Structures are given as structure tokens and as C-alpha cells.
Length: 287
Ligand code: RET
Image (cartoon, rainbow, N blue to C red; front, side, top):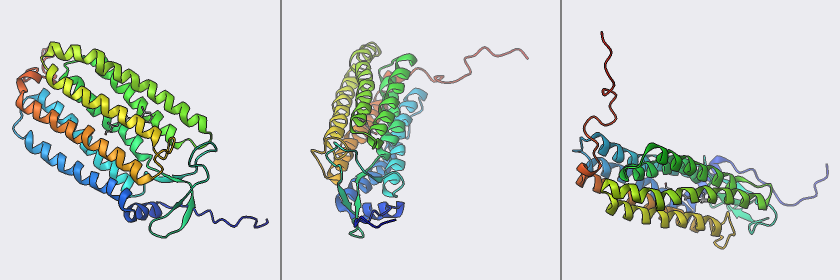
């Protein structure tokens, strides 16, 4: 075997990624700030909803609390180095043959940083957002299920787009599939649920939440295309990550705050009676 190459292709360990995040102020803050916010919002929502007794109102609140709970796990995954790694982009990608300097050691490694754990955990957090929206709109199980199924599809195919290193066009093919799924969710948000919400008497809050959601979710979609994993118009990993973190602050925490506040103040509008969700409405069997 001849030693023809001078570049050291170092294997990047989980510990390297953990230390890299910790030592890169921009990237690190985009992650650690969100762990703190997710924890604080969780406590705030427990406090705000402390006297709720109505089961359907509580279901909506628990649903948005699920978003913050998943968020803590999601960002902890990134901070710990578990769900973040260095990927070598295929030929044609703007980050092809790029190198990354590890913040703690100064060592150069081939590839760019991918925070792929985000896309994975969005598959668990965003269904809670849609469940809360669907329940507020008073929609039916079929539409809620459809929105959630396609939503999970967005995130898993988005994950595939981020992780594909075999071919540049294949990354965009995954992206295209993901956007197609996204349009199904947008359709439900813009054309199905507003009508349901009007009938349920929740059109005012629903429309606010709908606009917030549609605008921000398009923001995520466009940001991926512009960030270091897409066209790399924004090459900085820290900036790309902060973009998502900023969207998260509004799309998760502000969104959830508005939901909890509305539910606490308008229990009668979201209530379906104190037996909601109970199995006791079934006809009891004779002993
Ligand atoms: C990706 C890239 C592939 C194409 C599309 C995307 C959309 C992502 C969205 C994310 C929303 C995330 C939220 C997180 C809160 O926990 C995966 C970026 C369409 C819509 C709201």
C-alpha cells in the first residue's frame, strides 16, 4: 500500500461533535438556548393550565406541552453529539470537498456539519402542533390523521434529503417529495380546518395560529434550501442552525403559549363535556 495522500481523514467521534458544539459560540448558543426555553415553557404551561379540569381542554394543552418536551430531547441530542455529524456532500453540492475546523481542537476534517437530529425529532414534535390545531378547529379524526401522516412524511423525507450523500440530484429528489407532502398539510390548514373552525366558533384563534404556522413552516422549507445542506447560500452552520432555532422559538413556544392562553380563557369553546375521551359511555355489560 502506498501512502499517496497527505490529507489526514480523521474519524469524527461523538465526543468531537459534543466538544465542537460546546466550543462554537454561534452553533452552541443556537442549541443550548433552546434547551433552556423548552424547559421554561414547559413549566410555564403547567402553571398556566394548573386549574383546568375539562378533559378536552387538557388534551390540547398536553398536546402542545408535548412539543416542548420533544424539543428538550431534540436539542439534547444535538448538544450531546448523538444526532449531529460531519457529512461529505456529493459532487455538485456547494459544500463538495469542503472541510470543517473542529472548534475545540483546530483539526480540519472533510465535510460539513449536519444537524440531522432536528429533522428526525420534528417527526415527533410537529404532530403535536397539528393535533392541537385540529382539535381547536374541531376537526374530525380523518382530517387530523391525514395531516399528521403527511407531516411525519415531510420530516422523514426531509431527514433523507439531509443524509443522502450518494448523489446531489437525489438530495433534491427527497426534498421534492418532502415539499409535496408539505403541500398536503398546507391544503388542510388553509382549506379544510378554517371551515371546521368557523363551525366550532374558534375561527378567530384558529386563523391567527394558521397564519403563524403556514408562514413559519414555509420559512423552514426555504431555510433548508438556503442553508449549508441545500444551496449553501448561507454557508455557516451556526447561522443555518440559528435560523431554525429562531423559527422554533416562534413556531413552538409562541404558538404553544397562544394555544394554552386561549384554551384557559375559552374552556367552553373547546370543551366537549366532562366525559370527553372516557370509555364509560359504552353500554355496561350485564353482570
Ligand atoms: C424540510 C426540508 C425538506 C422540505 C420541507 C421541510 C419542512 C420542514 C418543516 C418543519 C417544521 C418544523 C417545526 C418544528 C417545531 O418543532 C424538512 C426543512 C418541506 C415544515 C414546526
